[in-house]
Every structure is written in structure tokens, then in C-alpha cells.
Amino acid sequence: MMRNLRFAICDLRLWIGIIVFTAPMVLAEAGWMLTTADFRQQAVVLHSIDAKGVMAGPAGTDVASLVPFDQFLQLERSLRSRVGTGRFILHLAGGTRILGEPTGYQDEQVVWNSPVVGELKVSLKEARALVRNGKSPDNVDQERTEDLVQMSNGDTAKGIVTDISARSVKINSGGSDLELGLDNIDWIYFAAAGKAKQQGDRSFRVRLLDGSVLAATAVEFGGDTLAITLGKSDQRKVPIASVDGIEQINGPVSWLSSRVAEQVVQIPYYGSSAWPTRMDLTVGGRPIQFGNQVFARGIGVHSYSRIDYALDGGYEAFRTQYAIAADERRQYADVTVRIKVDGKVVHEKENLRADVLAPMVIIDLPKVAKMLTLEVDYGAANDTQDRFNWIEPALLRKKPPPPSQVVPATKPTTRPATQQTTRPSTAPVVR
Image 1 (tube, rainbow, N blue to C red):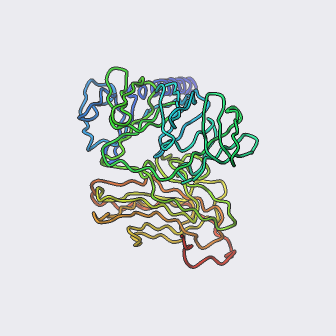
Image 2 (image 1 turned 60 degrees about the vertical axis):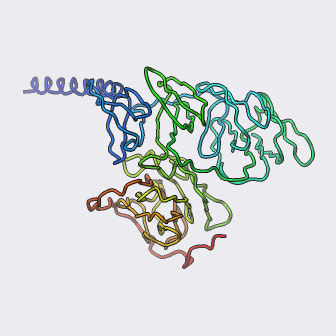
Image 3 (image 1 turned 120 degrees about the vertical axis):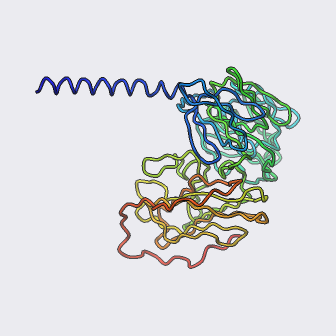
């Protein structure tokens, strides 16, 4: 009997080894995860992309079918290995960011060299920040009247950047011309007079494995190269092996984390220390997660938070879930959640606690609606640990059929024995 048991254990180990060995091969063969407008996902082999849509098929077969752009949401790598070479990341209006480094400055344009895309000329009107690779800037799209240089030793200089080279940055500060070594700079925030406008036509966001994110008006794929059209006619070709994902911005679904907000407000309960809103990350800079499930799309905030998004009548519904951010210390977290359309509350959840994933919320958006507001207000307890995630918030061209009733996942929570402080009865007045 012991001999049979040993054989059974050996067989089990053999099968486990085969599964572990072959699973990555299956994913590698598929290569991509396709998400369609109904949020269904499928591992696929990517055959081509043209003006008609995306041609893809199941792994292990020669079958391929067309997914037209009115049904296409995104493609993402099944397996990722992020690698990037470059000293800095150039952040542009609307979420574009390009890894590389500056090589010059002419006609109020930064000459930028990307290892993957090549040389680009970027107008300072579009530039929002130049950040050392590995640093995390906050409020990149905030309006500013001056350029701001942050040195590695903590010193700062405000004024007007007059020149940028591969070695230094020149800035006129208080009437004096300063030349600062690029190796000693952590980041530069550029003056921004206005917000980036949301494109109304079909467009794409291409993510590269080096961490760059490119805004494209068109994409084409054939063979081993992805052609990316930047602006009206600037086409760049990159190896498909360097591409991490392709997302359609103004298609059947539009992630709010990829759109430009009209206004982002964050008011701390204590003092002036704020937790800046983060797109596709928690306010602490971690992946958005509930239980064992990790979400690539979402918005991380801390109460009190308000985000306003302009509406143009092109989307019939808004869809989201939400939860307190996963954190080692969250037993006191307590917030009130509101969704508003043109200032009217259309969804409210009071006293949201940790370890509760709200069921899917779907809100009708009348064609005449002009503004969608996501608000996270102070709850009943002291404003402690109130870190919150909007999970996969998205605008939908077509309202989906009514979802089945979903019971929220809950875990036991421990409330404080007594209420620690008296909270404001109303939301703060925001001017």
C-alpha cells in the first residue's frame, strides 16, 4: 500500500510539474488578453489591427475573427516584464508620458529622445512635468503660472525655463538666470495655463513595456510592428514586443482614469497635508485590490474628495464599484459615498466600512447632462484611514441590461467602542 501511495505521489508531482511548466506556454502563445465592450475577457492571439478593427482568435487555433472598434475596449499583455531605460519621464497634458531624456530645446519645444519611439519635439504648452525615473509626481495637470524646479537636495527654483539640454536646465528666477545640472534635478513642473481637452474622435492610448503611455489617433498592426499615429500625421513604428497594451479612449467604453477631469478637489480633515488623487493606483501608490482580485483600472482618493467629469451626451450610463482601500490599518475607516449628475445626488452610501465591496452601480446619464461628480465625504468616525478606491469607473455608450442581484462580499469588522469626535454634518464648502 505504501508503494502504491509513493507512485500516486510521484504521479501527482509529475502532473503538477506539467501544469506549472505548460501554463506559461499557453499564456505566451495567447500573448494578449482581449476585453470587449461587455467587459468580457479572452486570451487571444493578435493577428492584425486596421481601420476596420482588431483581428484576433483563441490560442491554439488558426481561427480569427474581427472585433470592430464599436465593440473593442482594450488589449493587454497576458504576461508582463516591464523594462525601461531612460533617466526621466516627460509627462504631457492628458496623461501621456514618455520615458527617455531631453537632448535640446528650440522654439519653445523640448527635443526628447525615447529609446523606443525615437526623437520627438514637444511644445512646452503640452508639457506638464519632467520627472526623474523612479520619482512619483503629484498633481501633474494642476494649473501653474510659473515653472518649478525641484532639486535632489530639496532646494527649489521658480520662474521661467529658458533652455533645456542633456546636461542642464536654465531658468530665469526673480530676474536672475540660473543654470542647474540635470543630474541634480528630481523634477520640473511646467507652467500650465489650462486643462487638456478631451478628444471627441476615436483615439487610442498605447502603453509600452518601459512605462511610456502614448496618445494615438490611429493604430495599425501587421507582422511584428505596431504603427502609431501621433497627432494628425506623425506615424511611428515600434516593435509589437515593446507594447504592453492598447486601449480605445472614445469607444464603447471610456475609463474615467484615462479621461481628463474638469476638477479634482481633496480637502484633508486635519491640517494641510493632502493625499493626492491617483489614477489606476491607490492614494498610497499601490495596485487597486479587493481580496485576491487586482484591478488595473480605478481611482484612488482620500476623504474629502471630489472629482468632476464633463459629459457631452455621448454616453448613456456610468458604471462603477467601490471599496475602502486595502491597508494593514483600516479598522476605523468610515466614509460616505455619493455620485452626482449635474449636482443632483443619484447614488449615496453612508458609513461604508472596510472589507465591503459595493455591488455594481449603474447610473443613467441623460443626453442633456453636463457633469458627473464622484464624491467621497467624511463618515461617522474620526477621519482616519479613509483611503478609498473607485473600482473600474467607466462611461458606457450603451446602457447594459439590468445586472443580476449581487450580494456584497463582507468580512467581520471591528468598530470603535465610542465615537471619537463630532464630525461635520455637511460636506465642506468648496470654492
